Amino acid sequence: MRLLAVLDRVDTAPFTLEALAGLLNRLGPAQSRILHVAPSRDPDYLSPDEGMPDAAEHARFEHTVSAQTDTLRQIAQEWTQAVIPHRDTAWTERVGDTRTLVAREAAGADITVLSRPSPQDNAAVAEAFAGALYDAGAAVLIAPLEHYATLGLRPVVAWHPSHTLDLALQAARPILERASHVTFVIGENAPMEVPDPPLGAELARQGVAVHMDRFLLDTGDIGEQVRQHALSAGGDLLVMGAYTRPHFIEWLFGGPTQDILAHGTLPILTRHAPLVRL
Image (cartoon, rainbow, N blue to C red; front, side, top):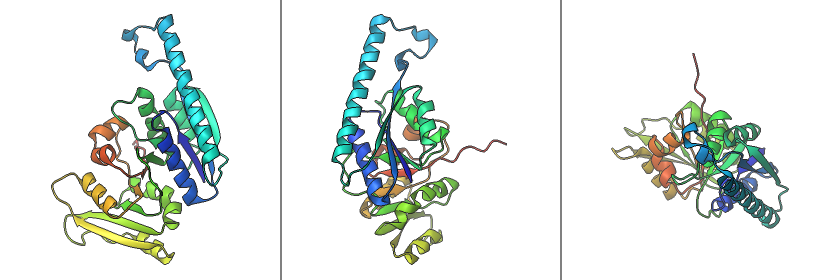
């Protein structure tokens, strides 16, 4: 298993690394790397009508980028030394286009850990998500912005049969098989409308405790209902399929999963299905 953690913000880096440690603890022996991409161009000057930065502005940009890289490197080094059990996790720095470089690195990983984005983030955070989720088609673990004592011990699967969920479950399978308890949250329009997931029986045969949490959908946000059931189940990881949207920020702040990602307090493991062009 190959794991990649992308550090792009000082304030979220500890939570991203904690999520990486949680994966390592659940999966056992695994290769892990930490990646930071330093942008080579100031995102404030990416379009022709915004002009070019003068020497002072360019110097400020380079100083900001360098300072952030130094701080993130220090955070990563301290985490590597403190994490128990000790993990030999490599630190990798790249300079250039964030989306391209993250996509390239994520393509070689089984799971890529990213921080939860927010509307206030700079363009590089959204570009990292787009590179990993859409360009690389990687399984992405979205780290929560709070401490979690465990990750994947009691995962919750938002069960809605789809190709994207199949892809997410493929990445999550080693975690589910090592879990102590797995809950399948199933929203229905009528009682027992959705058959029991075959995966539940497979996990049960392997000795994993499995629970089917069915509920009737109401007129409110489906994502919020799933979140509440996941939290009620004591979940420490939510596995769900990613909706097919052209841009991550649209998907995050204006798409069907807006409530899950904007208000979710769980780590989220998801994967995107590339569009099929005919």
